Image 1 (cartoon, helix red, strand yellow):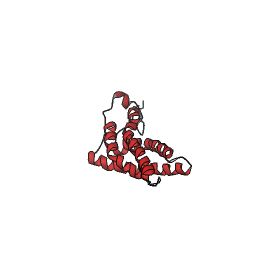
Image 2 (cartoon, rainbow, N blue to C red):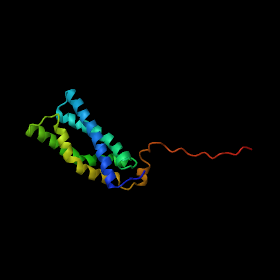
Image 3 (cartoon, rainbow, N blue to C red):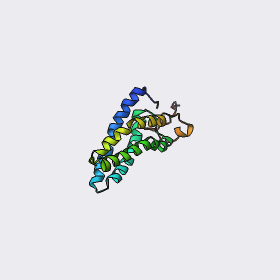
Image 4 (cartoon, rainbow, N blue to C red):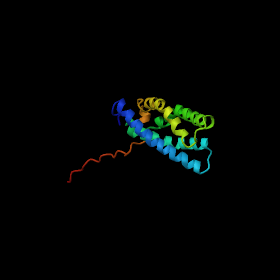
Length: 152
């Protein structure tokens, strides 16, 4: 697969994936709060689970590139800044600013978007090595063609 589309298209697709991923994260966060997890623990678990889905959505949809183990292992770097910004943001908004723990993650997440885009674009569009190409399989495996045999 190729990276398809220009940067503008990637930004639009990144925003759409971000919206879906934020909804997934937020739903999981609320679920874990309901199950009795402290808000920071709920944030961390929901963040990690939604990051896996984000990797595949960004691979196939945003950047139109094939997922590889290398990209998968580097992908958490795209969220490292996001994680720090949102975690500090949630803490500051809830404990220091007195904001509701229900809405604080949404505001904190908005602050991390530009950094996350730049880092994810760098990782997802880096040139593949031979080992990368042999890594995670494409959506559908290729089937070897069998030559036709002429009847005798």
